[in-house]
Structure formats: C-alpha cells, structure tokens
Length: 316
Image 1: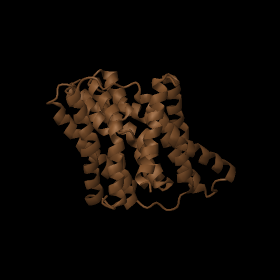
Image 2: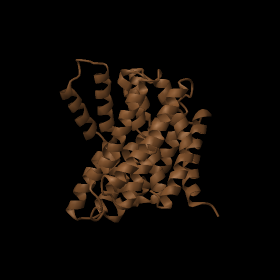
Image 3: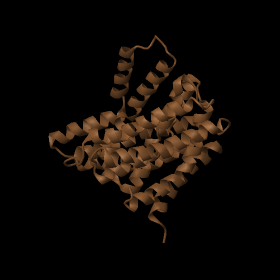
Image 4: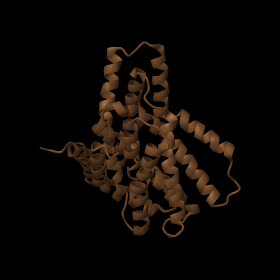
C-alpha cells in the first residue's frame, strides 16, 4: 500500500520536475513560465481564498496569534542569518540583508500552498491566506530597511518606504481577494452555484499550475559557487526557522492544531524566488541565494516527507 505522505509529496515534486524538464527541453520558455506564474498569483489562488472566506463560518483562531508565531520565528531566524553572514564571505553584504531575506522568504505560493492543500485540503485556506497576505510586503520592507541600515545610508526615506508598501498591498491580488471575500460574507448573500463553480474550477487549477511554473523557474537558477553560503542558507531556512515557529506556536501563543501544522510546514519551505530577485537587484550573494533555491527545492522532497510524517503522528 502506498503511503499517504508519498501520494502527497511525489506528485507535487513530479510536477515540479515535469516543468523543469519542459523548460530545459525548450518546450516551455521563460515567458510562458512567467505567464503561468501570474495566473497562479493573480487568478487561481485569489479565487480559492475569495471562495473560502466568502463562505466560511466563525473563525477558529486569531490572526495576530498566527502572525506572532510565524513572523516571530521568521524574525529570530532573520537575526541569526544577519549575525552568521558576517563570518561567511559569500553572504557578507550590506549587513547580511540578502542572507536574511533568503532565510525568511520561503516559497509559499508555488510550493507551500500546493503541498498544504494536497495534504490537508481546502480547510487550511484561512490560515494560508493570513500568512500569504502579508508575507511579501513585510519581508520586502524588512529587507530594504536592513540593507539601507547595513550600508549606513542617509538617503533612506521612511515616508517613501511606507508609500511603496501601501502600493504593494493595494495591488496584491491575494489581499484584494481576502478583503472582497470578507465583505461578501458580511452581505449574507452566499455564492450562486454558477460563480461558485467557476471559482472552484479556478481554485482547482492553482495547484498543478503553480508546481509546473516552479519547475520552469528553477531551470534558470544555478548551483555554481558559494557552497558554504548556500548550505548555510538552507540550514537556516529549512531547519532553524520551522523549529522556531513550532516553539512559538506551541508555547507562546494559542493556535488551533491545524493552524500550527500549516505554520510549521510553511516555515520549512525552501527559499523563494523573491529572495533571488532582491539579491539580483542589489547584486549581493546571488550565487549563494540561487543555489539555496535550487538545491533547497530538491531537498524539500525529503524535508517535507519527514515533516508531514511528524505532523500525521501528532508530534507537531
């Protein structure tokens, strides 16, 4: 009999490998991969979150508790990366901002979300949406602040940074979907069968397209050079951060058990593409970060299997 964990993990990483193979064979190019990714971010996942929030009952947990557990653990891992990066040449740039970004910014949308939905089902859409909704804006702001303070720049404008963050929030399709779903739920009208079916079809398309798009994007990253920095980032992101999030979820706040499992699984996801974009934009630690994304995603097949086993055994 096939293990339930294997039936979750192997199809997920099989689709990633399929996307990677199509990209390497030049059947799918980078532009097509970007188009698929935009569909996932701007259509499929927002459809899932809108439908879930619009039709859900009373919430089981408080957003602040989930945010404290997840982003509190992330903040501790972020600080650890900043300190450790000072001793590693390939990461010692601008106070370790790129290293901290790579430690904190996990691949939640293209890997964490499909993996969580495949294992737990759509019942985790609410905690999933709560984390995703502020994940990118908070980390981009923190990384920008970190870099400017690390470089002792006097040109940092908090007003400008605030405006940029507000713009990012108001243009984020995930945040718009959560807000729209909440407003629609308050009307009490429910969802008509026709738009509900359309939303369901879009939501169902999100998981396979996200995984395929991730495989396509991985074909552009490299493992060359900066091995010490790369393995350091993988260790901080995929092992230290989930342990910190688990500790805060279990002992510092009160969360529903399922929310704790989602938070820890998300924390264990490998470094995401936004960390590479930040690194590439500033030309800092590019080799180490790109390597952490590529190798980390491969190692996630093992890491996720072990973690899901511990979750199913109620260890987490």
